[in-house]
Image (cartoon, rainbow, N blue to C red; front, side, top):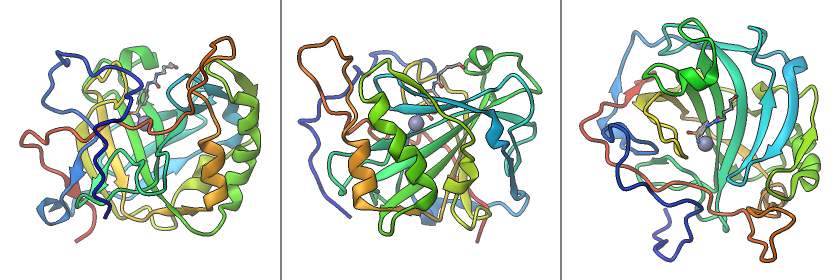
Length: 260
Ligand SMILES: NS(=O)(=O)c1ccc(NC(=O)NCCCCO)cc1
Ligand SMILES: [Zn+2]
């Protein structure tokens, strides 16, 4: 584990003084021995159609790979979820060094990066914008990244990143199946009720954090760090690194595990 003082970080946005609700914020530290095995948790059922992949967008926080979420072609159900959810985007959070970068931690262990696959509840809501305001509106799968062998499936995405170097740049991106970024075992996960980790920080998320990480190479992660927070017009260019939120108080919440 890496004991680093990150106090001199330059947060990309100011933590608001008052947070909506504020007692189920994300990310959190997952204390493994305090998580509760729930035998009623079902296997997760992601069903993604790569044809719904549309574009990559640098939004000034991260880069989002966005999917057409106007039909039920790419869905997530099962696990802790009662309803069917629709894939809308995935993105990552990472550090300036391999010593930190993830948003969630496991027994305080930091990972160099974390993938978030974002879905919204299409049984209860008609638009993402509605779902993002409701307590069971979103489901986000979190996957930790470790530095190791090159991830062949990720390379197609890495090769496209120079085209979205600056904030607000967008490039077409087709036929990418996010399932290739999931670990081989998706039956072992932790789940808890939390929030978005960037504004609007709304407490709408059922988090599903995979126990098994995926591996990417040092060079692949280095390309993430070549992106910029700033748009092409700005004089001072800022490297897109450390785009993670610090851990938030658990406030009495229980983290359930799908494995004992
Ligand atoms: N880091 S996180 O908690 O996974 C997260 C996910 C989605 C968002 N917001 C988001 O996707 N807004 C885009 C709305 C586009 C509507 O289609 C913010 C943070
Ligand atoms: Zn995220």
